[in-house]
Image 1 (spheres, rainbow, N blue to C red):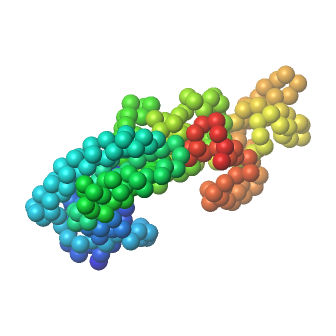
Image 2 (cartoon, rainbow, N blue to C red; image 1 turned 60 degrees about the vertical axis):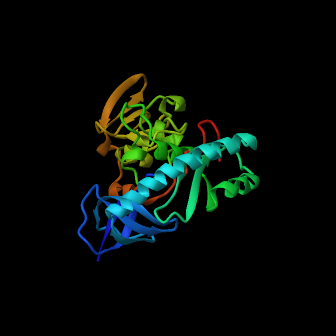
Image 3 (tube, rainbow, N blue to C red; image 1 turned 135 degrees about the horizontal axis):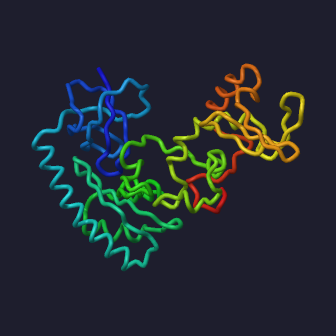
Length: 288
């Protein structure tokens, strides 16, 4: 049996589905069994990667499945408006984003964001009187909220997390410095208020800077001491200065023998001693 990659209808997160016994096509809807119950997911394609999820394939979506999903969606809109009214009545500091009912209709999921932890026990009891189903409140982070609801990025296109991102890597202020960008985190902040995910895409191209001395330090070149003032990995050169004279030097002339091994280590390392511990899980300007 094969496995596929698919996208949840509620959170838009990409998952791996095991046990596919039928031929499926990209864009097709299939029914899976997840921790939320039976639900429809959109097929993105077959996958050869190692499985890391526990979502199992049940069947291709039938017309009855699609009809039921549509009914659940309409009912979810009613519950959404009800929950918004109840949140206001209970004076809770939370923002309701989406209401979702899986295909089997066994639960109702309410996704929300909040600045801090919310005591919603009274809200759930109040909702249960009208809904008469199991209710689950799920607080999500701001990045997950943007992925779920969709948005336009600074580039003018749909945000990456809502289009193709499978795993959100941490992005650091150090990435801005590494890529020779102006050290102004506010200029590289996405609609979620966190550092742009696309900064992580370029990290691989600048890894060579991690095995060179910091800009501003001294470096020995051809028997003389120079000040390292700039490194440009994309063009493959460094700018050195000595006694007011600046010279461009190919990076390969400054790197030690077998430096490729050090680069492999950097690729595998999850952190760096020089990395500022501010990632895009926390608002810019705060530390964790």
